[in-house]
Amino acid sequence: MKTFSIGGVHPAENKLSAASPIREAALPKQAVFSMFQHIGAPAKPLVKKGDEVKVGTLLAEAGGFVSAPIYSSVSGKVSKVDVALDASGTRRMAVYVDVEGDEWEESIDRSTTLVKLSDRPELDSKAIIEKVKNAGIVGMGGATFPCHVKLSPPPGCKAECVIINAVECEPYLTADHRLMLEHPEEILVGLQLIMKAVDVKKGYIGIENNKPDAIKLMTEKAKGYEGIEIVPLKVKYPQGGEKQLIDAVIGRQVPAPPAIPINVGAVVQNVGTAFAIYQAVMKNKPLFDRIITVTGKSVKQPSNLLARLGTPFQQLIDECGGLPEDTGKIIGGGPMMGKALLSLDVPMTKGSSGLLIMNNKEARRAEPNPCIRCAKCVSACPMGLEPYLLSKMSAKEDWEGAEKNDITSCIECGSCQFTCPSNRPLLDMIRVGKTTVMGIIKSRAAAKS
Ligand code: SF4
Ligand code: SF4
Image 1 (spheres, rainbow, N blue to C red):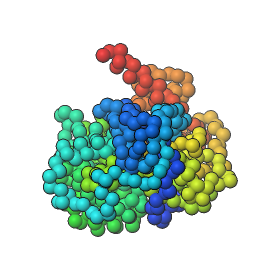
Image 2: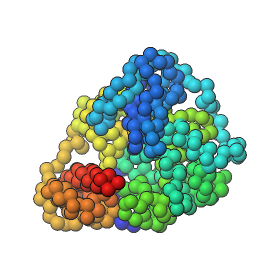
Image 3: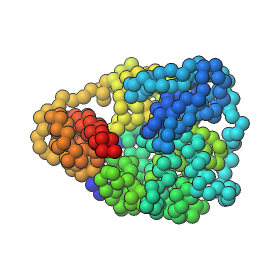
Image 4: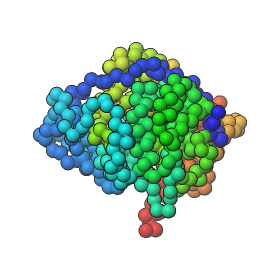
């Protein structure tokens, strides 16, 4: 069975919520919409205190080409435009809406009828990309890169295929798995739309073989969609990394940065993004909700919730039985790449794929011991880096050395830290080094221009 060629690890899967059908979360009393829900320039608010909004009303416009607009997920009145705490622990500009009722913009098609590509022959590449851009769609796997940018290859680059990332290799998370089981055809039409947008005839959906029900269903349904192939993949973390997925599915290696997937002819989108694209183009529904997994060993009801953006995390946890008494740490995302949350008074955003509540035992970090030079971290690194060396250089603030040793290629997957028998905080150190080196590279480029 296919998989990527370098490194990788096998953390315990703990897919506790895999059998829980998606259920709709209750509306919040107040929804808070951060202007920083994507990579790139922040969105610019278009509303002010006292404005009435509906579900699907535009709240903020994109702040540039690499940016995305923000839509209201609720109906009610704007109570303020002010800073709010986000998942990174930073106070950033946001729009607050006090919720009244649940009135939707009439332009949104709320029916569940499947709209096929053949029903909309007038849709060409330009029209699809424009709709995706206007709907505020970003990478739903957590990367939050504005989707229309990836659908517009730079001059000289030509897409050859689209690969849908349905790997969901992070332990615990099951939102993508449930989405495939409950909305297979919408995903397939979404993929067709992406294929049409970038003008290719071949589309793949990569799914790890710990989701046999999704592989079976998607394979059956894909028979009715020309050029689409379901690719079962051997379970290995971090197969959901773009470069690892491209290697696993079509056997091509993306060179080190600044090379990107399109340089080897691939456009990669998450399965949740394909679904959101279907909704935007075929149902005229901007991105204002998403599926989030709320889970953990002590959580009463591990769940997959369809929740409106702007809903506070606390409310989502309450809907799954409340915060367990033995809570040690709460992670936004999965255990490998997610980040610890400082507060639950933080609103859900476009990139919120999961909330993982770790109990005290799991949250406890083992004491780090000296490096024993076993090289396990090197074998585990899917990017072919030397994690022990990069972490050492970061600790010594040797930024030149870190840059020379490709620290910017690190995808922050955590495989090195996971595998280290001495419990070295490798990822923590490498993250600090990578951020610093990227800052240095940016300033150097700015000084040159
Ligand atoms: S976190 Fe970075 S250095 Fe560590 S294994 Fe992943 S890619 Fe390699
Ligand atoms: S895995 Fe840990 S102990 Fe082994 S070489 Fe890497 S940092 Fe050192």
